[in-house]
Image (tube, rainbow, N blue to C red; front, side, top):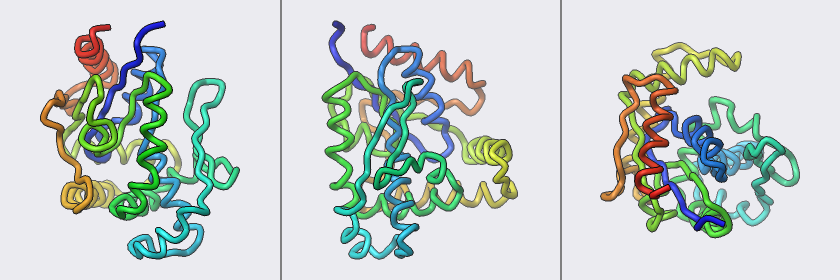
Length: 226
């Protein structure tokens, strides 16, 4: 059996981290861990309880009762469970992006989820994407990548994605939310979004999905000596 390795992919909202990481994991035959989905699940749990996500004390108080679990279906796709209910689709509603961003800045939430994420990397070879994977969650990751693109490019990608889901929003609104999310993620006091010193930066703004995936896989294979 090959030695386990880990790939940490960080970057701003809408950079294509999840889509590319999922495709790369499938190509490499390893587990994909979508940490954004984990935070979205916490955000959804807070939303469903009618709690203000910026009320750190109230959010921390309900964490022990969240009963959050990660599962993988037959296709190897990550499913998020909350109190035994599959909420994978609900956490992708546009409003949950704001909730995830706010609760992710709460130290108690980050502490609550840190071990869950690290345990996955101890058990399997993984690709994990988020905003502080290479800097905080997996500081010793075999490969660290910072995936980015201009805000306008990321907004257009998100705009088209929402259209395909039937939850379309005006482009200007999507761009504004992307810019606001960037500011919140890079200026939060706890684990702000930044490129790890030993991370390879990949700008996919001018690349197609296939070109981006090819570049990502080449980088991983070279760095992990696969």
